[in-house]
Image (cartoon, rainbow, N blue to C red; front, side, top):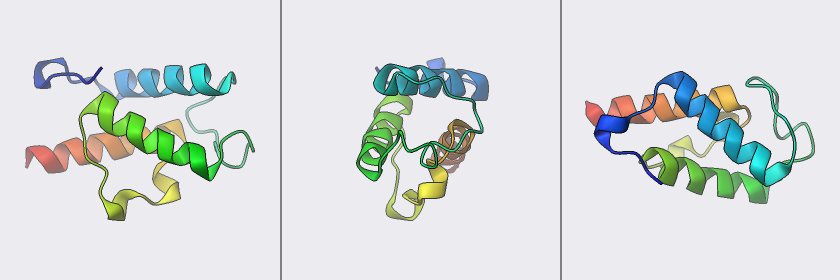
Length: 91
């Protein structure tokens, strides 16, 4: 469920929610900097599921220019993306 503005998660909280989602969906344990695509566990089709999860879970909009695979390659990259999108939305 998306968080309200008053419930905005910290970077650690975002990372935790992303990790939980990935573990649940892939049945694999992930390190924050581990390359999801190089592992062979995550496909390009699953990348679209990640985009939808990020948008819904963190109440952000991933624009076309943000759809680069590198933004979704690791938990850390996705966390940075969410923080960057929030900062842009708040500006």
